Length: 147
Image (cartoon, rainbow, N blue to C red):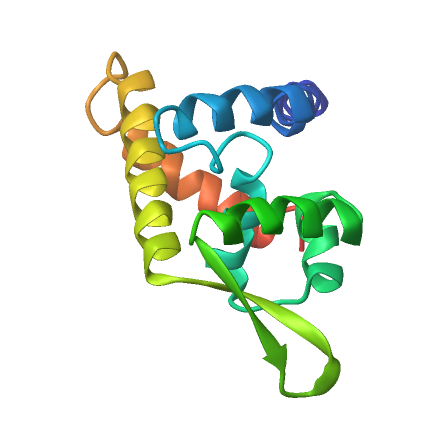
């Protein structure tokens, strides 16, 4: 029985973590947010919001790209005023990618859209079930195999 539950969870995580699943979600979330913000640039903007200023090289593993892929996407975001480059105080040769106020506002809008999308998808769940799921998901992330 326990092994079956483990397999069911592993299968669900496989679907959740697939790049195509994330790309479809990112495309839906960024719709109408401007030409520079799309399913390709969303992960860079979102990661910067989570981690704070980072170099393209340091951000690359978090978004599943190499440094040049992050740099290309960051250039699009910079041209749109969503991020800026600043000199890295610890390495004069490097630059940090930093969210601008406009970038922070875009992240807040994206997070609100994501939360609304999640809640809409759970609208048919019985009362209290979404709250219990959120609690158990957080516990799984903190105590589970990802630590």
